Image (cartoon, rainbow, N blue to C red; front, side):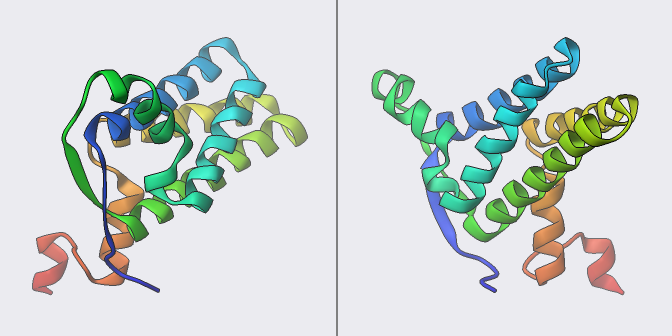
Amino acid sequence: MTRYKPVSVSKGGFAFCRLGLTALVWLSLILHSKPLLLFVFVMLLLSAILKVQRAPMIVLYDQTIGRIRKSNEVILNESAMRFAHATGTIFSLVCLALLWLADERMGWAGVFLFAVLKSVSALGYCPASKLYECATGSSCCTILKKR
C-alpha cells in the first residue's frame, strides 16, 4: 500500500467536489430523497475508482467553471483521498441499505450522521483522510506520536 503519493488538483475543483457532495447529502436528508443519496454514492464510488485527479466532480468543475475562472493547484495525498472516497462510498451504501432494506428512521439517522461527517470534511478536516495518514504512520496527531 502506497503511503504518500502526492497529486495536484485544482483548488476550485477540490472545493466544488467537497462542498457539492456535502450539499447533496444534506439535500437528500432534507428532501428524504433516496435517488439523490444514490447519486452521491455513485460519485464517491467513481472518485474512489478513478482517483482524485479524475474524480467526476473535479473534472466537471475543471471543464466548466475552471475554464473561465482559473484557480491555484492544491497538493493532496492520492492514497489518503482514495481511502476517504472509499470510506464515503461505504458509508453511503450502508445508509442506502438501511433505507431500502431496514427501518427508514435508522437510515435517515445514518444519513444525518453522514451529512455531519461530510460537513466536517467540507470545512477542511477530513476524518477519513486523517485516519488513513495516522494508520499508515505518515502523519498522526502529536499526542499519539509521543507515546
